[in-house]
Image (cartoon, rainbow, N blue to C red; front, side, top):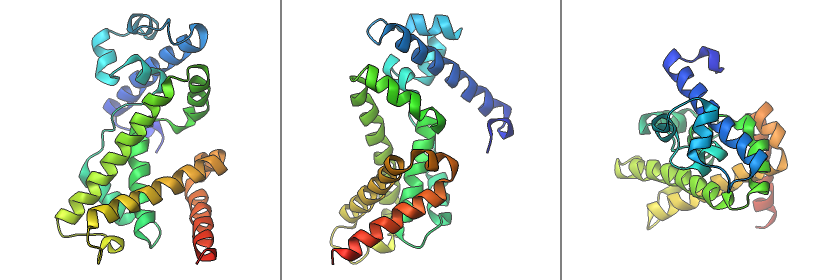
Length: 210
């Protein structure tokens, strides 16, 4: 779905998010992270401090363009149930991607985000924290399914289904990272095809090591 197809309220939210992020990223590339303040960001973005903190918790989050994901468990349930692929780890991949999309909002900015982290390595810690938060949301969804008696097939017959869900999530996360590293442009152009190739590679490697 393109931005123009979204409801006006959601479109305005994304545009405000983008203006604050652009201002923070541009100022960091110009002057460095140490010189960046919330005041300089809101001055360039043309918004108030209150608006800034409605979108980002810290200046580092604004630079990275990462925010706490706004996604409901009902949305994650629909994503899991309708995801392509037959395996639970594939469904879990799509749940995690849905959460990451809500965290990043615009995956096309990945290249600039990498450049910013190279320029300001201290941003890596905050980036990793957001990834961990996204994975935590995904695990919470899997735990909710288990608690509701809807344990994913891959987690059944195991003494601790929550630990099995954690393993399922780690496998899904690893495959997503592999796909992004192997073919970042492909993940933007045709994500499903790129993920299918990544899954096929992992299946082949696992089969070969039996």
